[in-house]
Image (cartoon, rainbow, N blue to C red):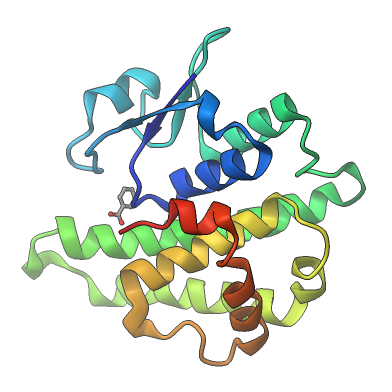
Length: 200
Ligand code: BEZ
């Protein structure tokens, strides 16, 4: 199998951390592409009509895409139990919350990088940050007992979202007021799956 990949994408990183955690990393070739919302790499468009990454090119069926779909597919393939039936709705909700942080973060980065300076809408950028702040606060207040429990996909997703905030918007200071989450991430980010996939 081949993964359409860019190391800076937090959605790609989710898949790569899962691959490391479940022992699939050496069975999936990473095809690195330079792609953006304005200039889609042909490899990305060939695998996913929207051009979004990650996309997984399978040997036994059509390409699949959207990090959540790929993560569930690979978890199923490896029988790794990262979506445990007993707490499935919690895992999916927390994963969706982490993905929403990533979406807002990537939107902020794209706004600064791709839009002409005179067209940047600061109020809209700040609204994206507001979503991130609210999501972080809810994770810090309501989800720490889940995050301190056995590893599942939501842990990986939250860690990748926080890693992206450190990578692209360190100056925003996400740790302020989120001490429990900060402590959890300090430990989680030491895992080999996280250090192996850290963007440079
Ligand atoms: C980034 O450079 O931040 C980025 C690259 C690809 C996808 C998403 C984000």
